[in-house]
Amino acid sequence: SISITPIAPSNVIVGGSPQAFVAMGTYNNGQVLDITSSVTWNTSNPTKISISNVADDTKGKATGVAPGSTNISASLNGKTSNVVLLNCEAATLLSIVVTPNSSPSVVAGLTLPFTAMGTYNNGQTVNITSSVTWSSSDTTKATIDNTATINRGVVTGIAPGSTNISASLNGVASNVVGLTVNAPTLLSIQIDPPVKSVAKGLTQQFTATGTYN
Image 1 (cartoon, rainbow, N blue to C red):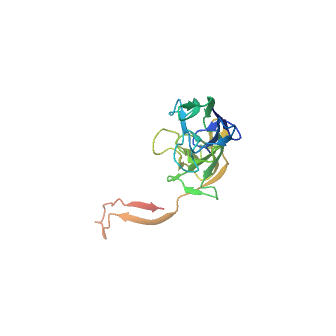
Image 2 (cartoon, one colour):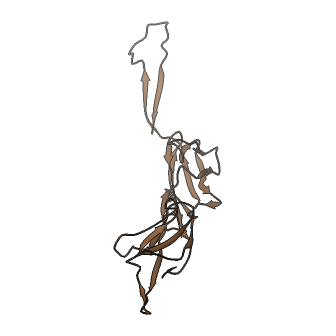
Image 3 (cartoon, rainbow, N blue to C red):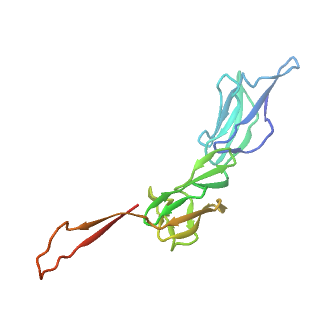
């Protein structure tokens, strides 16, 4: 007979650490041997949980693919083991970090992109900029894009002052970033037209065009 058991049994997480299984074989001479590396491992639903049959230290390790459940079993020489039900859970968001987070600033009229990185309980850190809900505490100073486009998370400076930028997803809130909005700086003035004279009794309208940073 063959008996399989998980090592330190727990549910697997999508994209998380594998769940190791061990297979013990009982023979007619009374011996009970570890045959984990000899059996063929089976999963009833590989779209939810896969299990390795590679001849190395990963053999017998189940990995979460998508939320759901599957039956794990092993076979060798016509003998099939007991069946173990294994569940796969979706990864849970633990925290969100918004950057830039070190005294960022933007000039009124210009834009500044922000990025949100999410850390999950499977150990992964993922860019979730396009998934979070962005917030600006004072939209009279700066707004931040929440539309489903490449501009999501992009701040636009509205008027000089300050505001707090943050993000949230699935009840998890990010750090709060203080953003300074600066007034534009005048760089140069060009007057037109560049005429040098005007006839007596007539007028000449001039236009001053300012270039800002």
